[in-house]
Image 1 (tube, rainbow, N blue to C red):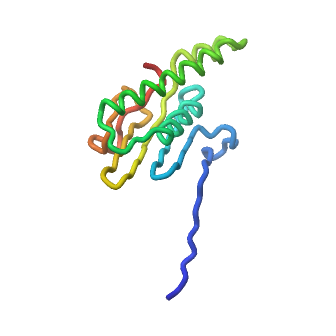
Image 2 (cartoon, helix red, strand yellow; image 1 turned 120 degrees about the horizontal axis):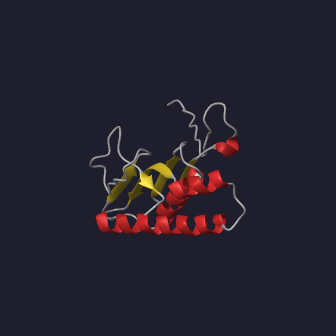
Image 3 (spheres, helix red, strand yellow; image 1 turned 180 degrees about the vertical axis):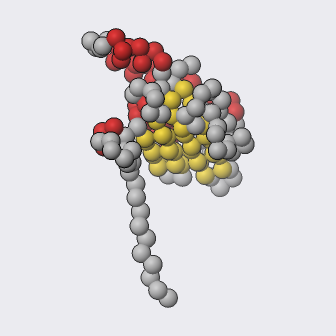
Length: 150
């Protein structure tokens, strides 16, 4: 039996031509949960929103979620964004940055939670309107976005 090498990658890569600091993506792997969020380039601070989504999914026990738990999770993420945004708004920011903050951020998101009795997937893309699904139902080539704004 031949030994096959396994290559693993755990990280993010910026778009071609962009610096590493400009990467707007986030991922999290914790136990039996995996989350990947792709911040929308059109928004401002999308990498912060993507990070909130990925980390919050892995910090929660998502196995067995139904729509009410998923909606509550999104609302908690939006509250965390709002707190972060308020803290940033205390600083001396240019008018155009303040305007972008008011517009919020968007991210494509997919989360997977496995347990002995359940598998939960959740996903949304970076295109508004904000319509999310706590399962793979309706998650196709062009699902809708998760917005940082409630």
